Length: 283
DNA sequence: ATGGGGGCCTGCCGGC
DNA sequence: TGCCGGCAGGCCCCCA
Image (cartoon, rainbow, N blue to C red; front, side, top):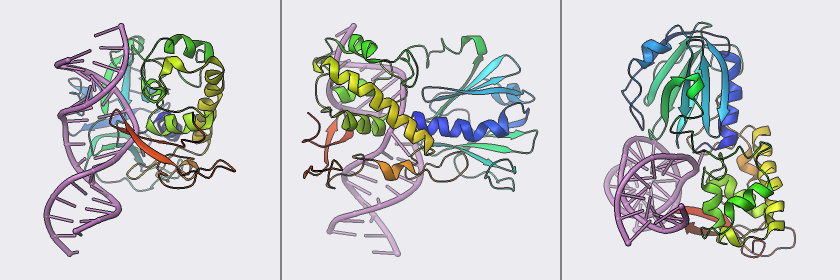
């Protein structure tokens, strides 16, 4: 659900209330999300100070003073709800536990951070900080799309000879880590690439155009504070505004936004997921 | 190795 | 108003 910009927005919202602050107590209200929580997670979290809040792809990483890192994935519907603090635009009173609040962290500064995830596709794990990169969930992730290692030459190498569609290739977290359905649709539209084109068949100059488009759409979404659809709210509880700037995502049947184009946005299904695109502008 | 599809969960929305 | 099918931003796993 939340893609890279949404997770980065959550990270930025949480950092002021969590970084440098000890976890006074952790309430782990069920034994698992998508996978079982580590044993004694609540006990290990209690008293640990959050040294830094980082992000890798769609994962939040909280480095703790106990030498362990709390890995958090929001899945499709995960949210971090902050209350009990005047830092940021949060609810001032401590929010009582609500339905689907699975893990509640009460910080020593009075803030409460509740992990709420209705669909429970999310995940949490606690690993030695030095082993974060090699954790089984993170080990095979590709480069960050906003990082230096991601460029057209890299993409060319990874896509050469591949028969999968461009849509599927950009959704593959081993190739580039952090894009999801929305931003893949938007980036392919901006780059004028047909989502169904076999990845290995896209010409180098088009990949050269694609990379800055991916970076731009992600940067703009972060700048706008994420997208936030339906049941998702960013860390400060405010709805994000980037969703109003989608060119094609969720706009089936509406006019293509390209000036002079008279087509409507199409929706097709690729490997079970909706793809939105303009058949005129994307070839 | 590659790629395609199923499944995990709950909630919401539109149509009848 | 109520019920039901379809759909949702992710990702692992199995199968051909």
